[in-house]
Length: 266
Ligand code: NAI
Ligand code: 15L
Image 1 (cartoon, helix red, strand yellow):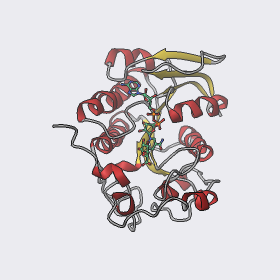
Image 2 (cartoon, helix red, strand yellow):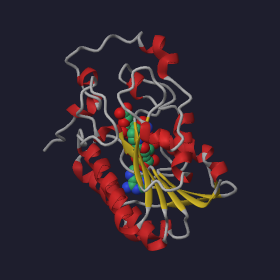
Image 3 (cartoon, helix red, strand yellow):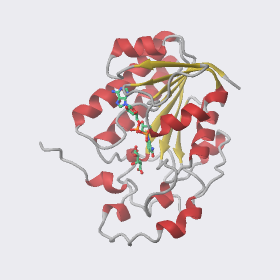
């Protein structure tokens, strides 16, 4: 299975760099975009297009000619609202407007666990619970999920919104023992999200087969996603870190420290 021309936004970022390599087999042409420069020059079957997601016209030109979009671009941590507004809120709107105008029918949206970050770590959630965003960043991802739903209901553009847990080479702390998503499992989930027919707007959790997951991921199973990796293999290493105080947000909330950030000087 292959997409003719696949747009990857956020291509210079941590996950973008990984997916640039790993999504290669799934696209005739990979159009790579970011506001920042990419570390490697344009290769065969690649097109590099610099673009600021807050610029509507530039995003329109970016999306023209693409058959599907993996939307990773934007601010990926908690920041002042005005920064999140430009990159994430306007950005996701511009992506879907351009998808509508250019007839793109499938989007994979990098949502985040921070849309449900204010749930406690002893709560077990499915993908239909009320969202409880834990900051401006989580709010922007929550908005993105609503945009995805709207563009499906109104225009038939299908999306899988992946609420990514923590996707890094390995879990960096005790909280990430629950939220970790390996790069291999991330790639599989994106592949399933691109090619499974009839997804409408499906929300899934991006998490590996960790021992203590907080999320019922039956929606992802419907896509055929069966995670291969587990954070267990890193447990000894992570548990060498000092224990986290029971009053620390990292030990209380699913969103961890994001729940306690800001205000940003105003
Ligand atoms: P990252 O911060 O490394 O990459 C994001 C990229 O977006 C950067 O290269 C940045 O230059 C670009 N960007 C920022 N503002 C932009 C703008 N105005 N126009 C165009 N590009 C812009 O983040 P990472 O870790 O690679 O995450 C990728 C996506 O996945 C993000 O949307 C993030 O919110 C989401 N995500 C990642 C998680 C993780 O554990 N890595 C967890 C949950 C969600
Ligand atoms: C996210 O949404 C961030 O983009 C990432 O950098 C991590 O902080 C991750 O969530 C997490 O919750 O561990």
